Image (cartoon, rainbow, N blue to C red; front, side, top):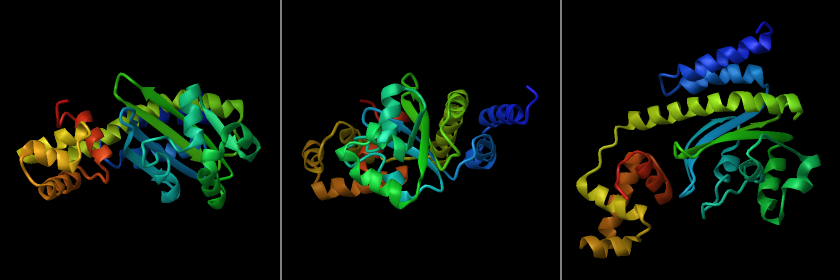
Length: 242
């Protein structure tokens, strides 16, 4: 490998293998990624599939409104680009010319946000890590074009980005050093199997208000904002046994 792009790809692979800190992805990996595949905005995430819950997001320039809308309140994928990648398991390119092939009536809000934030185009790819229990996605907006060379480049680099993102997430979880009380673990275990606060209170012999306090406490310790995210993190990291 003698061309500048080939040297950059090798440097990216090395950086992906060498992450040792929480900031490693953005400090060491992302600058090389920007040079290999120039773009205006980037976001990636790692998520569980059942239940659908985003475990971690790394955002470089995407509007929070757009990122928050990738998974809707009922756990469905709300992005036609991510849905197409999940269906085809191949790199995806989207722009206004491809709108008819991607966007359905249910995607009106997504398309409006895409236009409002002047995305212009979007490329996406990821890794369905079924054995590892987590799936990653990588989205680029404002790329020069979506030609075949870019698609092949994504297929080459994304597995390495996936490995780096998983390390990034593990370091995040480790840094949290989660310590739950025995009662918080009991409540969390029941949340993981879909029990309501009222049902949990009946099972444990405590009031629904007390259950709510325990839920609020373990969500703060886990640094999550939804019960589904808490359940996904708990199961992923062995905090409960289902």
